[in-house]
Image (cartoon, rainbow, N blue to C red; front, side, top):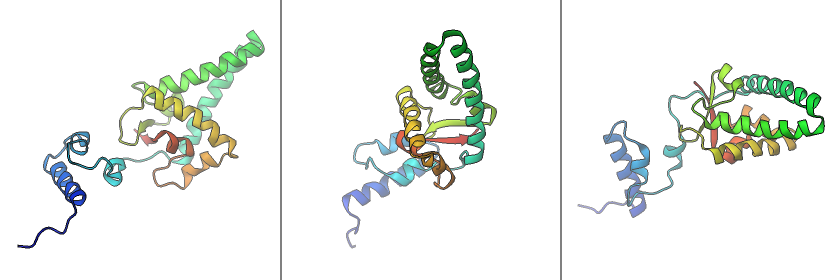
Length: 173
């Protein structure tokens, strides 16, 4: 018999795929992090099968709801505290986005109303550091004349620049 033409890394990929399919609904982290298997299988690692991603328009509606809520709170704080109220509102917005997206609700009030959730590229809940990265990356999306937000309309998984930088996706619940 001829020797297998697969290189050692190709053989590990084939073995990890067959091990994953033979386990049925096994946790992919167990298979891809097992000794001797490659750590970078982008198509298998990132692909979320059976998931509908949040489109540009529904995410715009969710963002508008959040902006309205923050404007009402920010206006009240500005009226009550003056310029200091704007600083408090900015910190409150950071806390709101980070804590809501990293909580079990997996989204802000606007996203909850629109039936959306923020998850990482593997479909797991977002951690606090990842939610912070996503929040601050929204500034970059906005500074680039909004192109970072417009990217949601043409990327395969409906990711904006801030989602790509934070390795997150927005899905329909």
